[in-house]
Image (cartoon, rainbow, N blue to C red; front, side):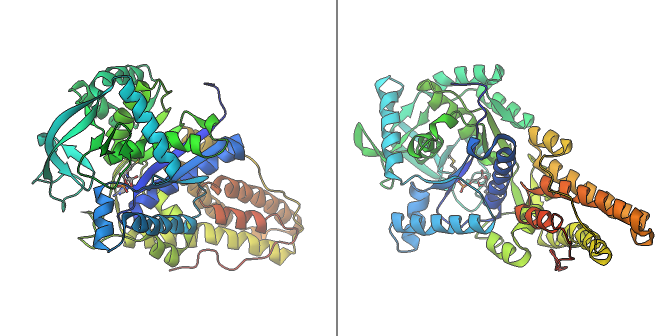
Length: 472
Ligand code: ME8
């Protein structure tokens, strides 16, 4: 495999289709979109592969389907379409949308596990433990709070005892640890990496890779009475995708797996164990961002505080929602979402910030009947490059907004409307160059606004546009 490859392969988790997407899913997917758009500019359109999709098997999905009186497949079709609809509204530029019920994936999973079985890395054993169907995962006693896991306070753990097939994760954890220490692949942010290292050093158990009591899943090729554990099926999507879609094989290994910290363990150890066992090169970076609450509470259907991204997009527009999500939280840390704060930020940063700046400059140009000869800028400013290379899209967008605030201040100080005509022309040329650079820097974050600004300020006769971000 070519280490110096110019390719960039970025993934989001594939989301469960037990319910419609909420703001947490939107956050990860918008962030992944920012990276994909950024690297398309840096590396070229054809050198980026942005994958998202849906995780459709397992009891969590089967139970929801049943509650809606639909077959799991019908229900999965509906919800995965919901995901596609929301991503379209948020201008998510994914290259492929993966579904684990794709028959080509099912075949790849079966072949993959058969290989591990033939190599002797899979064995049969009895397992008894407390299971959270919300996470589709077993929990150890030190991770349990009031008979629930930390992420699903309304879902009681149930005791399950089954005879399953197990993957020898414990054996491979030593090799994974070695790769982490060699920095062959990175877990970010560093605090998360240290947590994972601590957990591995505390001892790793082998992991069950099949279920006997779950019918909605991929059959194990060597024992048709069992289905593949939904997490194993799901993780393999990242690999399957490079085989299923045409001309994607060159993208292996993944450059960046993005997710929240809730599923980091699966992505930073289990996934690597499965890959090492089949001698497949490991992903480069696993990045886990924080987990969000809404007004201090866990996002939960039962609590009725779920924010539908579509409602937000209808209220503010897609770029505004993207901006609010990207800039409101430090990438990697937990955060709290408040609709009131979103509104304040919308008015101060978008309506008053960029909206005002565009209007002021365009109006000056229009009044002067200015002859514009500027052409769009074609490269990112050094701040953007620095922050993006450090996995800080939040800092990157903040640096753009600092420039916007400074710019508004400078115009106030310059008082260009008082300048004589020739001096004013000089100033406007300078302003336009600056705003075109801001517009280019904005593209990965606010693609529509970026395009609108570039259009306005590349015309020969600049006209003041209708308000881009009307006050709310
Ligand atoms: O775990 N804050 O799917 P899932 C931040 N199917 N991010 C959040 C969030 C919150 N409150 N809630 C959800 C699964 N997310 C598996 C993944 S991948 C091989 C299989 C985002 O639908 C975040 O990215 O429960 C989190 O990791 C993911 O949704 C969990 O999505």
